[in-house]
Length: 405
Ligand SMILES: Cc1cc2nc3c(=O)[nH]c(=O)nc-3n(C[C@H](O)[C@H](O)[C@H](O)COP(=O)(O)OP(=O)(O)OC[C@H]3O[C@@H](n4cnc5c(N)ncnc54)[C@H](O)[C@@H]3O)c2cc1C
Image (cartoon, rainbow, N blue to C red; front, side, top):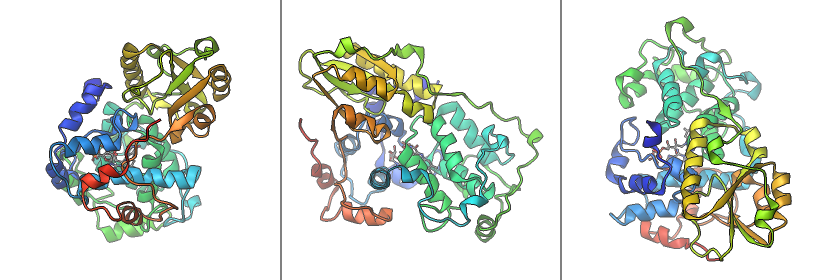
């Protein structure tokens, strides 16, 4: 069923874009059944760029530059900005949080992993995550806040677990959002209580009489004390088996070892899991198209079968347009095979740093917001700088024209 929900085709991505209701989004996006877009799996894998998303919406209506929808696209771009400037430092505490790092456990407990904490909002979030590979933003915030502030888990181990199961897993948006909730990337911890859940979630998620059924003052004290709140007795809730994560792409991808003979003496266009949009319109004749799975990355960051299937099906769609080879190998083996080609090009992607830029001339992925020189300490600082001098959403869209080769 989920493959229908997030069908990995350009047509499905465009249909979702065509269904965006910006006014309803602004009014209801905090509610689990609100008019959120479901665009993130397509944006994450490059089927849609942020400029394409905004252009798609502006083709139907004008938006104020300060519209909530543009703001949310801004969060994604801001997290990428932080990643660009801080590099792998985003995987560790950016600054001190409410408690010293050593006060938090570093292993995700089984009752959270199996969605049997006895706190309905958490168990429903885990069930939804495993059933769909997606979670509403509010549910991600609740899950993260519960893990860190109530169960005293270091955000990093829980962020790694969530990343693996998400269809839209993105190291910048995911890990920096966890830091924002934890208070190691923001000024204060994000807290929520049962009343907040009752306001924004359907009844099955409501959690009266649980550890979160208390005031924000009590939650704040809890976040700043080192003792964690024990889970409800496990036997009261059935729980979910955790889907396996894998470093291996599925057989359906038809991946093989790098084939130097395929690229020898030819120009190469490299595709990767984050660049699955339209093929460039003017590939020189005889260009060899190669889709890469870099094992060094996936050994560290395994994916769910659902995400692998999403990627494999989109690659199969691309292969119907243009013959291609899929390579699955270490960065060293891929680099050695590509050395036989005359020229290699690709779209840049920070998940593949440092390898991709060593093999290929990389074009930047289309950006919606102007680049801001120097790191910004907060989203509001970044927003002010990146939209300086702009009055309308149309002006924002016009700022960054895609660079030609
Ligand atoms: C703990 C946690 C982990 C997260 N992990 C990821 C992740 O791995 N990948 C990811 O893409 N997003 C992540 N987000 C951000 C956000 O939850 C998702 O982008 C959003 O829920 C995706 O659903 P949607 O496409 O329906 O979003 P919509 O609400 O419809 O928003 C439209 C688009 O705006 C962007 N966006 C919206 N909210 C945010 C946000 N808070 N931060 C960054 N971009 C945003 C996304 O590209 C999204 O597709 C995380 C948030 C939290 C709190």
